[in-house]
Image 1 (tube, protein in one colour):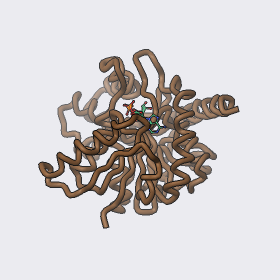
Image 2: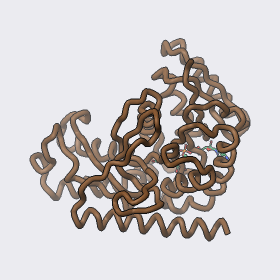
Image 3: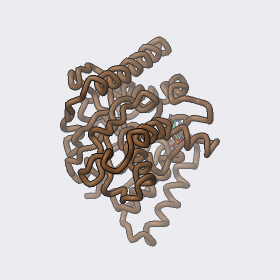
Length: 311
Ligand code: TXD
C-alpha cells in the first residue's frame, strides 16, 4: 500500500513538492489549492512525467479538502510569499486567515496525518496549526532549519570549495533575522570551521545565512525561494515515511527544553514513524543561549500580535 501525501498549497513550493515526490517515488499525491484548475493541472502534468521518471505514483489535484482523507503526511505551503522589502512577519495577518481555514479542514479530514508546515511567518503558522488542530506535539512540525542550514552549508562550500556532503551546519531559533547559526556545532568532515576559515569569514557567512531568504526574494522580485524549501520538506517527509530517525533542525514544540516552554522553536529533533520523536538538547554557551532566548522573545511577541489580530 503506497503512502498518501497531501500538499495543501499547490503554488511554487507545492508544485515543486509534487515533482520531487514523483521523482523519488515516495507515494501518491493529492494537491489541494483554492485556485480552480491549477492543482488539477499541475497534478496531471507531473503524473505525465512519471513514465519518463520510471516512477509509479498517482497524482491528483483538487479544490476540496475532503480529498485529504487518508493522508499519511500533509505538507502545508498555503499562504502568500514575501515581495521585496517585506519581512516574513509582514505576512502574519494575511496568512493567519489562510492557516485558520486550512487547520480546521485538516482537523476534520485528516486527523492522523503528520503535518509539516512551511507557510510564513513559519514559527507562528506552525503554532497556529497546532493550536487549532489540537494535534499532539509529535504530529506537527515546521520546516525552517533544514533550509537555513542548507544555505549555511552552501555558502561554506562556495567559500572553501569542499563538497556540500561533508559540510555540517547547525542553526537554532526562529526562521528569520533572529535565527541562531551555531558555528561551534558546525564542521567540515568533523573538522572545525576555524581550521579552514578566519572568524571574519565565518561571521560574514553567518550573516549571509540569516539574510538568505531575503537575498532570493530581492533577486526573484515576484516571490520567494521554492526549490530548496521543497527539498527540505521532502527530507522531513522521507524521514517520517521511511522511519529513518534523521536528526534534523526543525521548528518543534518545546516544553522546557532549552529552558523554553510552550513555543515552537528551531531545534535538532529526531523524525521517524512517530513523527517528532525526540528533541535533542545541545549544551549552549552564554552567548548562544542569549541569542536563542532573544529569538524566542521575538516569536512570543508575534504570538501576542496574532492573538490581538484573532481578537
Ligand atoms: O522555510 C520556509 N518555511 C519558507 C516557506 C521558505 C520559502 C517560502 N515560505 C513560505 O511558503 C512563503 O512565505 C509562503 O507563505 C508559503 C508558500 O510559498 P510559495 O512560494 O509556494 O507561494 P505561492 O506560489 O503563492 O503558493 C501558495 C499557494 C497559492 O497557490 C495559493 O492559491 C494557495 O497557496 N492558497 C491556498 N491553498 C489551499 N488553501 C487555502 N486556503 C489557500 N490560500 C492560498
